[in-house]
Amino acid sequence: MEWLVSAAKKNMDTFKDKTRDQLEKEGKLKPKPGAPIVTASQAAGQPAPSISSGPQPREEIAHIFDQVKDLNMQQGVQVQKIESAPDVEAQLEPHNTTPESTEVSIEVEEPVAQAQVSQTQTAPEVADVPTITASKKDTLGTVITTPEGPSVGGFSFVINSKVSRGQFVGVKTEEGLLIALISNIFKTNKYFENAGMVQEFSKDASMFAAFPVKEWEYTLAACKALGVFTPNGIERVSFPPAPGHEVVEVDSETLNKFLGLDQDKGIDLGMVQQHNLKARFNMTKMIQKHLAILAISGAGKSYTTAVLLEELLSRTIEVGRVAIFMIDNHGEYVSLEKEPLFDGQVKVYNVPEIKINISHMSARSFAALLPQMSSVQVRVLSRVIAAIRQKFKGGESYGLDDLTSAIDTDEKMTAVTKDALKGWLQELITMDLFAKADNPVPETLLEQGKMIIFNLNEEMSLQKKQLIVDYFSRRLFDLRRQKLCPPYLEVIEEAHNFCPEKTKQEFAISRKIIETLAREGRKFYANLCLISQRPVQLSTTALSQCNTQIIMRVTNPYDLDHIKRSAEAISGGTMDIISGLRVGEALVIGEAAKYPTFIKVRKRKTSESHGKSLETYAQEFEKEKGEPVAEGREFI
Image 1 (tube, one colour):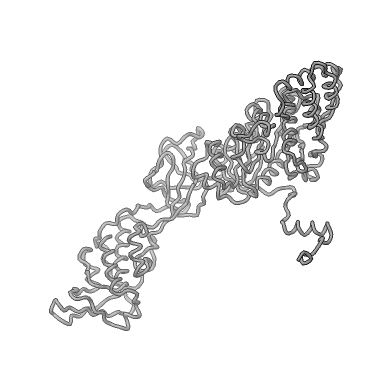
Image 2: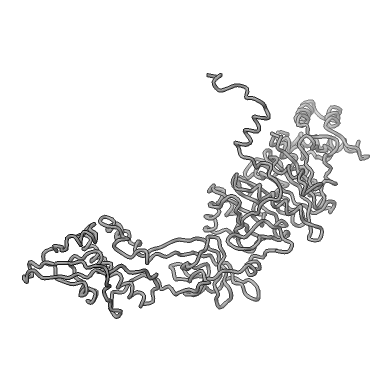
């Protein structure tokens, strides 16, 4: 290739930007002193090293490249055949027999005849050009050799049909059908590998004018090998595919078995991306070992959660159904109560309606709420509670007022301790949360096929929210361990607020029970679904126990790193795809799917409570409130 580059460069130095029209008008070109006389036909017939070092027009250089292209085809390198431009046949006449003053006269003929090129002509070997075997029309491409493979971890192939990032492809090997996931797609061109050559030719002329650049451009796909599908099941890849093997599409039936989807009784979340296959996941695999839905704000995690709730509420007795306990931090799901599709299946409780029975709380429970209490005060309060329970052992309940009275009448307690305890209890009274009876009653709260929503949207106190979550989560889990309530799924929106990472216990009241549910809940069919837009702030203990994760767009590098550490199935290439997902696209990994699966979430069957645009909502709000209080100019 060096002789070719040298000849082209020399001609570009001489003719610079001259075109065919200019050459035709001039009729002749004055060569540099000492340039030998050579015709176009002689140049075509000579061996490569003997090509004239004298100046030649661009058409002559293009003609030489056509010869090299034909030779490459003979050597087995497949390139796209394009219509050749008419050759220029130069007629050179000597004006002086003296070698020192040789002139070259070039006459440009009409482009009607093409020069005959000998097919047996030899040329220097073109290095570093991969041999590409012709593929059939129904294949996607051909496996090639790269510095990294093919290996048991992955391979690359030249694309000859439309494919997309995140698509599943197959390669037939001796072991069976190897299934792989396209992790990246990129283009390459041999002419642009050498930065120095590109820079040098860019000074005088375009690479596209001097060389057949387009003929050496091709597209590659990098794939991650997932497993081998055999008649005996799915096995690990133990031997890589050979270069030259054809890459084929994976049919829906094979892919369904490979991913372990459940088309009969599964939870329909949408479609597997790049494939005509419904993303139906088995309910047991998806939620029994807990589920996490992670995404930045606006990526569609609440929409996806609503689709999941629709699927769970639509299940029948025949396919199995669970009760749902929903912690709605922003009131995003309360509209489901009024949906005709789920008439009578959804019940919403607002914060003012929720009450906690004080008689179910121990001294340790009070200490969790009031971290300022000393160990001595906790011991004294424990003795007072034991005494008041003896007084109401007939089954009656007591409230904070009864507990305060018991502290006043306790003769063993010092005045300082009495004042301190009464002060702590007064703080609890102002929360307006404690009463002599629970509301709703945990024992009758849950029912299979129905959903209970705690709407915490109007409450500003995070401590009060955490207390509600802590109390009812503990009560329901205790009942489930005794088989006194049905199997259920507890869904917690903004889970990082209720189970934070690296936060003092007094500011994370509900963290302990959530982590307990994550570790032990699956044994008792008390399942957990954590939804968060800040995974890095979510307890690693809880997140790592969520064996299925639905990950939508996440861009924060700290969140991405946190997700990667909690999910072993995510590779570096997959992390790159996550940060580029569009709204409504998600990656499902873990128990629900045998291999990472990209899906497009289906359309909701119910209406959105926050589906209006900001402009529309602002207009409606202003109309409801009447005219503006004042015009802007009144403040000037």
